[in-house]
Structures are given as C-alpha cells and as structure tokens.
Image (tube, rainbow, N blue to C red):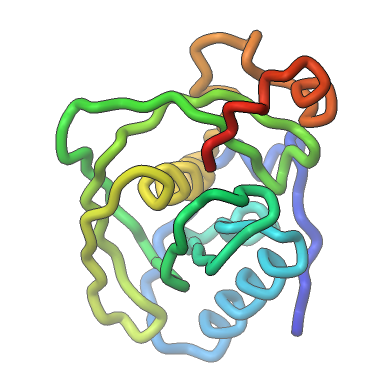
Amino acid sequence: MAERRLLRMGNPLLFRRADAVTVFDTEPLEQLIQDLFDTMAARGGVGLAAPQIGVELRVIVLGMVSAARYPNAPPIPRTALINPQLESIDDAIDEDWEGCLSLPGMRGRVPRFRRIHYAGYGADGKRIEREVDDFHARVLQHECDHLDGTLYPQRMRDLSGFGFEEELSLAGKLADLPC
C-alpha cells in the first residue's frame, strides 16, 4: 500500500490543467493508479484525481461499496479512468452536498448535471464508456474538475451553502444530506 500526501486547497498545483496521458500499459501508470486507490481508501474517499497527489496527469479513480462520508449513496464500480471526457445527456441539474479530500472538513452545495455520458481509457489503453446518473455522475464530474484545475467551491452558486461539516451539522443544514 502506498498512501500519498494529499494537496489541500491553496496549493497552486490544484489550479493547473493536467496533461493527457500518452503512453499506456506501463509500470509507472499502474503504480500511480494503485497509489490513487490506496490514498483514496486510506482517507475514506469515493474518488481521487492525480493532481490531488501532485501528479499533473489526467487520471482519476473512483469507486465504493459504502462510504461513511456518504452513508446513503449507492455503490460505484471501482474504476480507473485516463483522459476522461464528459458530456451531459440532458440539461437536468441537481444541487447537492459535496466534500473533497483536498478541503478536509468542508462541505458545499454544488450544481452538477444529473446524467452524463463519459469515455476514457483504462491503464491498458482500452476504451471505457458509460452513462451514469445521480451520485455516480456527481463524483465523476467532481474528479474531472480536478483535472482542469477547478475545485468545487468555484462551481457553487451560493456560498451560504459552504462551510465546515461540524458547523453545518450543528445548524441542521446537513440533515438533508441524501448521499
């Protein structure tokens, strides 16, 4: 297991656009993906992007059976996705709570497309394509934002729905946390 140091909001690497992966099926790429999964698991996350551990490549991982941070969320298949591309299926947008391992202890209400089609590649260079909705779509959009140097507070419409989890919980705002 190789848990890596997570960068936190304020680190300039989190605001840069990551580079595309051009060579697949290599030991360094496999190790990066394993490190991302190990770090995500150690921190109780459901997704993680390479820039969050200081690697400026377009690689994300996601997946969970259950997660303490999102107790009612449905499972997401364990996936490593390289050079992802997203497209909304329709114009339906939901605003819901999100957290981020690079903003520990914080939550915010973020608008995201409800349904998306995504495509990319696995570590072996084989194409992956899926249509997903709701929580799975939200996690994927969140992680792909990291590849473009965007953190979730930059997507928020109203900062009154942003704060420390403990304070939001005391104020009764996280009671509607469906995921």
